[in-house]
Image (cartoon, rainbow, N blue to C red; front, side, top):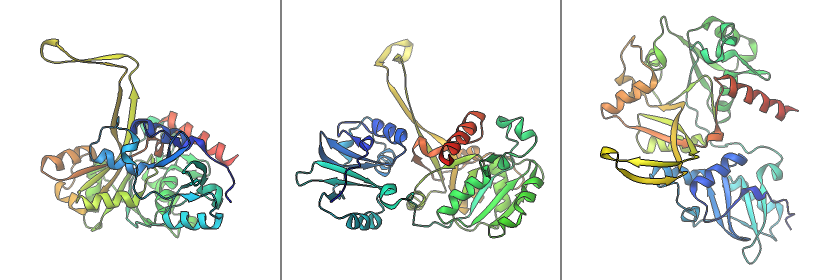
Length: 358
């Protein structure tokens, strides 16, 4: 018999919109919600379901009930804990709805509660990772006047170690650091004996080439799919889904995008020619995707670049699209993206880590 330790924050109405589901996921830091009408268990919706809706250009005002899966997985109130654990492991489920004989929700079993550890991605991707670590980090001055941004500390690690650690968890073993500003300090830091088991190499611009131009220095050493990340960005994503989307669509580049949505606190007016009012909307919601600063590249990208050319990655993407190349965007939750390159978010991350450690 399963004890009742239900996390009711995961529950959402079938008549809630996808936007409301996204907001709840961001608020509670979870990627799976339980859909209930009253006490009746209806199904589940995951961030993967919403990502597919976005990729299909569905309207985020659609109700979540439209996206209920036919292959729902749930447990019964008489199932043993061992059976539930086995099912959760086999299906890689972050939580398990438990229902009675009338399909009323009795409990929600969380992975962390039943296994006493955080759920980790078991599927590995093993892609080389290029980290753009050559910028001056103006947004974090005056600290970056003394040390380069990649070496700024977060608890007992540096920013760049945090980034590398996330990729190591999903199977990435090879790291290439693109350095320029205070590059020797970064080389010296990683020459320490504790990094002997890391596969780290460096490329260094003789003169600034931009985030795109420095990639060209790797033209002859990256014959396979590779990941590029800014050195101040943390992204929590299902990298297997990301890589699968990238390859199945035959993209030259896939941008990891972040879903942003805002409530406008005023009534808005849409006009057409000569200022004629076309529509009135009362306090509308606006949603869009922003560039996270993390990308998946195919080696064909080098065909769109020139030696010793100064170009940033966004401008490179515009060039590729203009020449008919395929660029994709794969959305992640706003709560799964951290920009550590400004004081506000850097201090927020420091405070969060201190709370976790205390």
